[in-house]
Length: 205
Image (cartoon, rainbow, N blue to C red; front, top):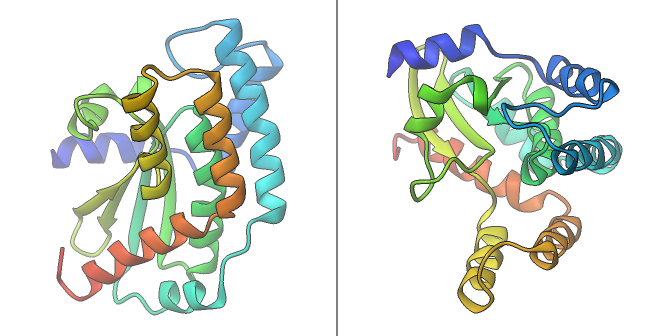
């Protein structure tokens, strides 16, 4: 597992690099990933607009900033993502702002799911290749401490309810999910990531 993570880190991108790669592909009418289709390209284009908006509107609370800056060690948040993923578009700008606010305690790195099969296969969700996944790595020890994702608990519950009552993912649940993120304002992601970082800090993970 350590070699798989090391390989992924070697091929990882900064947030700015990730954004540029997605944007450059869109300029060619393409999306990231092995599969290419008009729908995936359209999702990627929509996600570009979402991320641009979130970069301007997401606020990291002072309490969150203080806790991030007082972590005992330095960490890498290695995120598995793709440009067409709606959840990733909602979450990555928050992770980036948290990393920037951490006083270099957190280094955000991003890899593309379809370019990192071995890594993805270690972090399946109920047997599926759901993204984004945040893999928390302690820099000092060079080990994976825990992981998080693919979405906050409230959004996960919304999806589970839809699957139980309606069935497969459709346009309605996609819209409902985006409205949930809009109302949440990034708070759940901040709280859940802080919770697992605090657990690591006090050796409960």
